[in-house]
Each structure stands twice: as C-alpha cells, then as structure tokens.
Length: 290
Image (cartoon, rainbow, N blue to C red; front, top):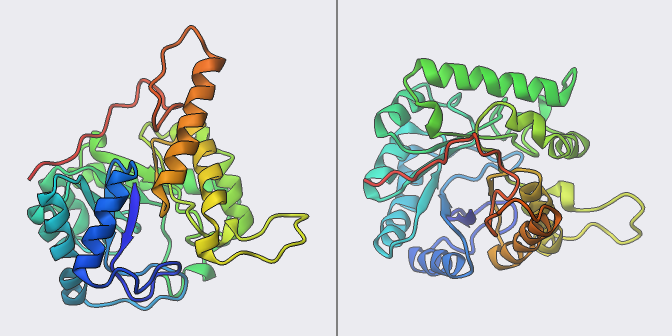
C-alpha cells in the first residue's frame, strides 16, 4: 500500500501533494513502483493534529481518488468518516482504511457493511490531539488484541462481513516507541484474530533512532531504508499488507524476504510478493468494484 497524503500537515510529506495534479502524478508513480493499492488521505493523523471538516476532506480526496481510479489504479481512502468513505467508494475507491476502526464515526460500520468494501480497522483509543495521553496498558499485546477483537465483534454486529476486515495494530497511535516494537514482534498473536494484518511503520518515530546508535535521529523522509527493512520483516512474519511512503525500496526488500522463505522451505511453493508468511486459512480480501 503506497501512501498518498493530500494534506498540508502530514508528518513527513505534508504539503507536497496538495495540488490534485501533483497528487495524481505521485499516485501513478507509486503504482509504477509496485504498489498494489494507493491509499489517499485528506486528514492528517500525526500526533497533535487538529481535525478538519468533512467538506475540506472531501474536497481534498475526491478528485484524486476519481482520477487514479480512472487510470485503473486500485485506491483505498484513508478516512474516519462514513460520509467520506461513501463518496470515495462512489468515486472509484476499492478499500476503506479507517485508523479509528469505526470508533470515530458511529455511522462507519453500517456504511462499510452496506458498501461491501474491504475495510482496514486499526487499533485506536483517541484522536491525534490526545492519543499519546492513552499509552497505558497492562500488557500492550494482550490489550491491543483484546480491543481489536472487540472491534471485530462490534463490526460483525453492524453487519460487516468478517472477510471484509483487515486489522492494523496502530503503531505509534496511543503507543510509545517500545510498545510499537513489542507489537511488531508479536505479529503471530495479532494474526490469531483470524484476519489479515496490515503494518504501517513507514517513517514513524519508532524508526528514528536505535539503541546504541551514535548518530542523531534522522528526519522522517530519511527513514525509508529502515522502513524497507521493517516492512520486509513484517511481511516475512505474516503481514498481509505493508503501508509505506517509498514503495520501490520496500517492494525490493519484501521480495528478498519472500525469496528467503522460498529457499528456507523448498518443499512449499511460495508466491514472491507480500504476505509471504500469511496463513492459508485467512480468506483473501478482494477490492470493492463500484
């Protein structure tokens, strides 16, 4: 999943793709570099970000979604609002990526159930302005798995089919750096929820410096090598989707991890692509075609 932020204030690329023509050109580049889908977001969810209105969000995302879909690109819309999700799917989006997992908008779950679109439900506790006030866990892996499980139950009660849902542990969202790394090391426990897992570590502060390093923490846009490494490891350990800003480097790294898996298990045919470690019992998530 290639990241396309059409915002002025996202943490690593805010303002770069605010003009629809520039955004569409970048989306096409992400696809050319190997993105299976392009995630268009019009509202920043960086720590401390203020919310925008639905009207502003719609103005930012719809022209880009429509243009990319017209080029045959599989598009996801990154939104917490049912109104935006519905309009984006009508404009050609095939996925809905909701960082709140349906908690920010009570209309989201019934909307997604009606649309039938694949839906990424992220672990979430609060909006960006206050989310880092909610990093207290008894056991971060156990608590995140339990809270995601509760979301799956709530989504099912609203009519969302289980096969529509992808789960995301929400690295950096109401998580400290150490908590995010603990979740990454525990992908098998997240996969035990029975749904594909998406990992979004790209350029986040957890990749900004490592124990024992004498060099200063790199700027977000200088974290793509670390992103490629962590994405390859996540795919090797069963992530079905990795969400990244620099697609080309990550595609190369994930293919290396997939080839490693082939070489490690010569008796088991493997597809050289994402989800090299995904369980065979997890039903594939298919894009919605409006």
